[in-house]
Length: 232
Image (tube, rainbow, N blue to C red; front, top):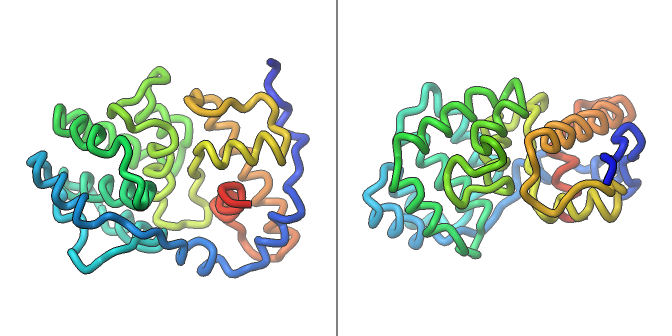
């Protein structure tokens, strides 16, 4: 199938209407319940840094919480980087823990390689979506086993600490379904997207965000559009 011409798709009216709502409510306040005890137990059992990834009384995480985490990473020790990863995975998984034990084991099998890949991804995520994506998906394979596009792009997204000009955004199967079915990106596959597709996706959302910023008279982050694509 020929690649869809992404200069043509227009942002659906329902998304444009959703953008009128406050960013702090739709983005920073987007909160997910997490399986705190499971994560703390599994990380400790694997003898990995970053546990406890949160206190026992914390039962949910928000995008805003993860923005704060990223802002405080600085140079990023191994412990800080892995705690950030665990918290991103916990938020992304909610109470559905499928594959997370395998992800933890993959890190435990080679912690130095996992941390190196994370550090490279986080360092480039604020400037180059393609290079950052490639750090966690080199040659269309997972740098960390079982950390595919849906979760690796969450890492890249949260690396921006919520900055409105951050160029990386989440791409998962739900977002992709809306792009295909509603926005008519006909050539977009269901998963396993190559680096070039992720770069085109980020560029498309950037175009839409710039158009909506002019229309609304305020800066729109590309994540505000992703939020609607995830659950239109």
